[in-house]
Image 1 (cartoon, rainbow, N blue to C red):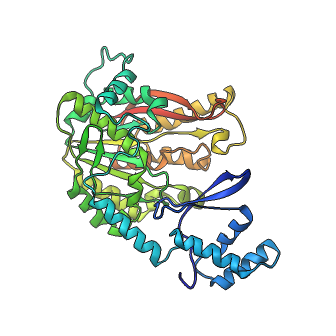
Image 2: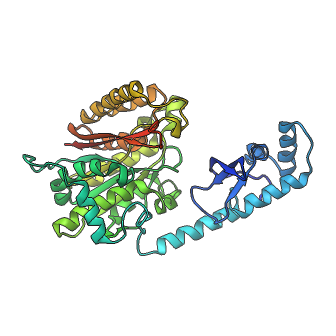
Image 3: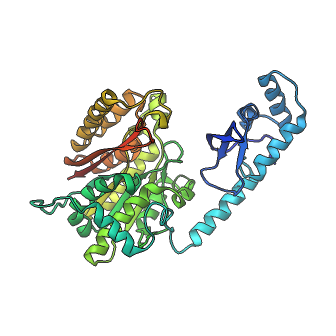
Length: 407
């Protein structure tokens, strides 16, 4: 254990254990199989694990925080458990990270995380399900579309299947004629402003979607190995890219052609920009990533996908109100304004609308959509679908999703 323990970046999730509220310490990188839960009082100990205090100093600060003296063994035991679970930023965690990255990279592909959970792993059954979502979608009079980008959901198919079908079926010609597909997905566990790559090809029940490793290498050289791959393990479980990749592969399968190369990119949170008055347009890493992508793909026929959801609102998402008819109508208007900025290709307006209200609607596609618009450098488009997907049994919470085609 290090002399001055520092807690790694974790997700703290409230859970109930034996009838009492506890905190679950979730590691986004999943470096260990051990799972730790802590009572709220003891969890205050974590506040002082910032890399600036010895265990004795952490203990003293903790005792002062709770207003009573405790045996130092309590702090020692907690530190030992955190260390064993690789939750401290130290050599043990770094070794586990290196081992897990090596294991992931030694696999022939990135395996589907949601097969037989969110959709069938059997390709025939999967095709039947995706066919069904498009069954009543009328394409009469629809002309082949050869645009540059689409906005697709990443919610589960059970709730968003018809919206997926509307956008992907209308994008079929653009998909099949593209030389390269870029999928920008929300990294739900990602750090602030991250742009996370992987060289691993994504697998679906239909087979393998090859990765353009030369382009990945070019992006890596531009933004640096650490920035590109620090959170690469998020690709293992993150569903945002996967759920669009399955629809992409479905179209190739239906057309009977081999898949074209794909670049899967996970985009981290913009929370720090919104709360600190910064802006992604002034961020060196993101600017370098986008300009490199533009330069490297110039002259190629590229289809870019933002695999995103929009608002997450209601009690299920920690709001202190239910989504009644009035709030639903207001949210529809807010989403409409965002969509209008997107179909104008106005990245500045899109960003400003979300930032102006400190992302109170929790737009899950904030960073991928913004980066998509920056990459396109001007576009126009149409909205082909919009829906509210229930997020609790009472229908007091929901997720809004949209399908958009961009020229």
